[in-house]
Image (tube, rainbow, N blue to C red):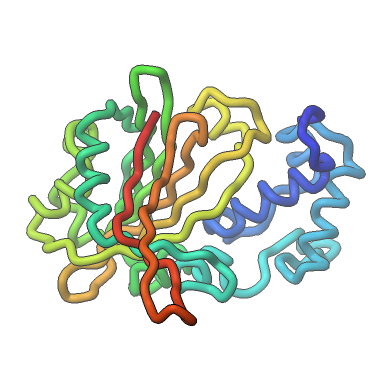
Length: 264
């Protein structure tokens, strides 16, 4: 990680914030020694990262009780459209995503039914503890790994497909085959750094910049049916938008005419 321009403690801070947002630390964060081993850094570096998280109001550090997250996970705020988060509305992109899925290969890493964490339940409008299908896949082009995708689907919808089906078809197609009439999607795009697991799956260095996509898909009745966490290699994935100028001469604005996602 030393080749990155950000200080090591800040890199670890960013990675832990992302993992916190994904709901990984419901039972508390790993101890300092475990984090030292995971990131290969000194204890003072880990402590500085944790101190910054505590100063930002993300975690609580109490002697004898460990380190725990405070309040609702950030992912829930992102899923609901938190202020300051840049949002991209998909329009016709869903068809484009299916097309891209058909033109790439996929490796299913894991598929299992879990109980919904607070962040997943909030996004999918479920109760914490309700069953959801969690699927982890890596999608590749001929050049190599393109994306690491984690999807959460309500259990009553996902029971109609599993590992075999997810290895053969895009999940949007599987949803429609399960009787879901896909309506719209809400998407946020940010950036994050690759942790050790992502680095291995995407064949990049730990600390490499990735394009982070959060996509919440609704059916025609406005029920959330899929929450997607996607991490993309920016050297193999491009997100393009066509803009048109509209409005009066003194109040012209740019509006999106067409949205597309392409892989390189």
